Amino acid sequence: MTGLHALRSLPFLALLVAAPLAAQGGGPPALRDLRQTVGLVGSADSLRRLEQLAIAVVRTQRDDPSLHLQLGLIALRLGEVTGEMRHYEDAYDEFGTTVTLKPGWWIAWYGQALAQLGAQAADIGVLAAFRKLTGVDPELEAATKLATSAGLDSLRAEGLVQFGREALAKGEARLVAVAREALRQSAGGPAGGLRDVQLLRAVIERQSGRGDVALALLEPLARRETTDAEVQLELAQTRFTSGQLGGLAPWYAALGGAEARSSRGCTMTSSW
Image 1 (spheres, rainbow, N blue to C red):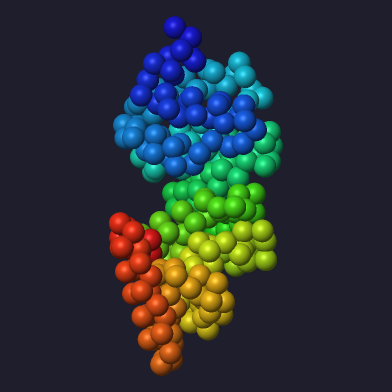
Image 2 (cartoon, helix red, strand yellow):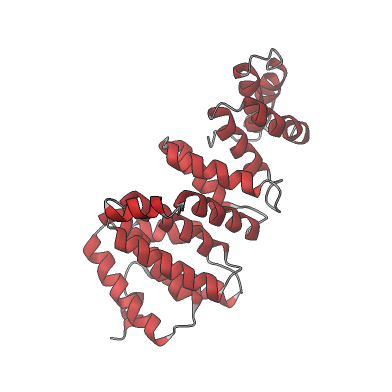
């Protein structure tokens, strides 16, 4: 059985089929499908077997960016499962090769950012001290890569938005700071005007004690999204926490928006 056939015989099929199909269309594979599929593999031994099979395939098709992307995702998952820095470094290299072959694939830039942050978290001892002395700032570099991914995915900024939401959910200050920097870098770019990007940045700025920045983002966004309950609620909360008395109007607007959505058979759930 060849490496490619062996890969396709495993539950990892969805990942390995999705990427080539997307490549045929000229665009990157869907992030949600890729992350969910690779996330199902929780055994380090299973991941290592997948990695070896993927390496065997890549050796025969070195110019296929989707294969390097798949290998990067496997290595990234191995880093998450084992905590070993070398897997994050392997992931970073594979995503880098994908960027070289397909610089317009935002998911590769996003993957590099995750791998860089994972390597930093696993980096201890002499290497960590050396990087500090040489002025290398992996968090800033990761933020720049996330901002680049958002610029390439200017209709959704899916990677940046997902990263920021996960950082808020985890409550890890380091990751929130990276998201904040990436959002700031994205502000003047093609994704800077997206509703999700502006709302996410406003939430992070408010939680970071910059209510003035959050309000500067939310006021025009709320005027534009008058029936958006999430936006109106965030504006109300930011006004209240900033000591302003004008939080009632957006609060009631948010309740009205929620009621309207409920009447359409929807329920309002906050992403933040």
